[in-house]
Each structure stands twice: as C-alpha cells, then as structure tokens.
Length: 299
Image 1: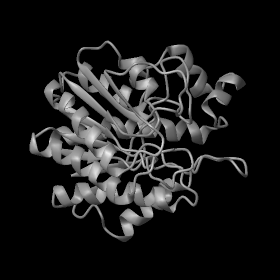
Image 2: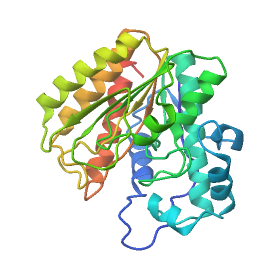
Image 3: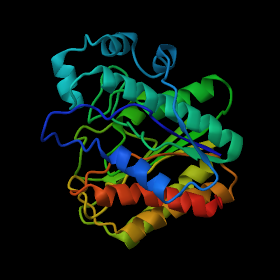
C-alpha cells in the first residue's frame, strides 16, 4: 500500500499567523517515529499538472495563481500570502489526492498526510485553500473512466462549500458534509447531503447522526470514497465549536473506514482542518485516523 505527502517545505507565513503550517511536519514525525503505517510506503506526491487543475478550476484563476499575478484581494480571501512555496505545496497536495485515489483503487486504502482543501471554488480560493484537491481528484478519476461513482465523506467541522460548488449537480458524485451549524463558511452551497450540528455536540450525538448520514452514502454505491477527516471537531479546537474527544474522533474514523472496508469500497484519506492550541491535539487526532486505518487493514 502507498500513502503520500507533499514533499515541499512549510508555507512561509508572517509571525503570529493563525494557520498552523507546522502541523504537517509534526504529523509526519509521529507517523515515522511510531511506524503507524507499518508495511505501507510513504511517497512524495508529484505536483498536479495545469490540465488537471483545469478540471475543477477556471483557466484565469489557475494561471494567475501559478504566475503570481493573483489580485491581493483574492489572496486575502484565501488568508495566506502568495509565494512560490504556497503554489508548489498546493499543487503537490492536489497531486497527492489524485495519487491516493488511484492507489486506493489498486489496494483498497490510501491517503495523504495533507489535503482536504474543500473551500476552494472554481474561480477563487478561500479559507486557507488554494486549489480543491478532492474535486480535482474526483473529476480526474471519473474523466479517466477509472470509476463511475465517487463519494466524498467530509467530516471537517467546516462545510465543504467548494466541493459542493464544483461537484454539485453531477450525478456521478455524492458529497456528504457533516459540519458545525454556526461555523465558517457563512454562505453555504448545498451538498448532496448536509448535516448541521449545534455548538457543543459531543461524541454520542455526533456518532449517531453520522451513522444515519452514512446510510445515504452506502445507498449511492460509490466505487471510491474520499474521506476528508478533520481534527477540528475536537473540543480542544479553537475554531471548531464542537466537543468531541479523541475517543469519539477515532470512533468516527472507524465508522467510516470500516464501513468502506466491509463493503469493499476503496477509500482515500485527506486530513482536513485542525486548529487546536497547542497544535498537538490536532496532530494526535490526525495520527489516530491513520492508526485506525492501520488496525483495520492490518498494516
């Protein structure tokens, strides 16, 4: 089995910036130190080509971003300063999503130690998301005829508005978004199914709602699932507003991953958001997802 990571340095950010870019290296360190992925290999992702990005994004947006000619107000909407490193990392994240989708089709399970950039729309980025990795990967695999039905199970606490905007209305795609009702983005785009959770939702209520929503995903009979996990439903998350424990988050992961495995549906993991302070709680949440996967597939 193969998993992927964007083999690009951390995004350069000004002091005090609220995006925790160091979490990716911290996750990689835990994965390596504890050998969480067992016999699976961890591979640097190739950057997505321009023609791949154009499956989900407009040429004007892609070309302006690649050339560094993007308007300052567009970068403010993304919330990150433009840099060559940002572009390289964003392209590698999309490439990792495509590669993990293909690897999951080969072996049943894959993923990357990044990804879940679900706020990027066709013509603009938003919410720390430049290019939409899962939308590009979904459309790439569909266009190549490798699959005919794809589901995105998005349990990041923030609604995947970009996924919904790009993929909405495509009968080949089912997008489930389980999210905080009173959280970003405040202008929503309807997913195939949206599940809004009140502030303070804990483990038991969360898991009951998720189990019911997953029934709709299984009824769709996807040939591939992209699982956008998110560590931001944790109670420790400063942007999450929910109250899950690590035990609850691992139960969420098992519910989705075992649901895929027991139905022989290939699944590829993207880690999504996590903004705990200190960031260690988010990193442990990410690592636990891969622990659950490794246990189920006996890596």
